[in-house]
Length: 309
Image (cartoon, rainbow, N blue to C red):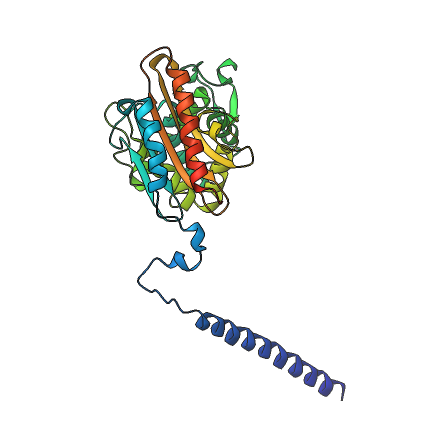
């Protein structure tokens, strides 16, 4: 009798489990079938992004930016802005090439992160400081003793947050030019650099777009790189035009002797993110102040356009 009751109990429990699984299957299928795209030939994201955040008309922003751009010099600035929800964009002097200064560090960062993602390195793997890696102009790692060891995570943080030149050279030497080239080819950035390593603002923007869409690194690793870039010290270049509570993941660069100033990154207005890249080539002792003023005005104009009223 006890065996019979146990068998009945097992059958009852089994039937309940089967019923629940069937209900979940048919219910889920029903929910899938209840959604019907009324516009099958149009970008499906339009069905999920609120229409007020689907900005396509940037003409008012262009009308604001043009006099600023003309005031500071058409022949020395390359500017590109892209609204990420729609791809709507504005560019000035889009084909002009300028030296990127420390913006040149991003391809090495992407290649290094890829090696970690593939398991060839770990974040705690260590690299050794060689004499040829020492570069004093940015960062503090040049003060360390030759032979000192640093983890990949430490080097990435120093390079992306503090723009440390020594960290960049250590990573670049160990990643290798081949790995960086593979990244550029995989990301469709074969034309990023010319023979003098100059870039355009429009082409460089694709690096940040690839991070935002996780089209090269996985979401985990893209997020980690962007998190470092969001910790760059405040009030540098484009950040000057943004409120303190708005996240900005960016890479800046400067070469004061050559009057080169550059900044590129993603501004995270809630539900309205956009990328902005500016390359500024000055021509004299007043260039740094002029560049800072231009970066602040352009950044504020873009933010004011995209923020929700």
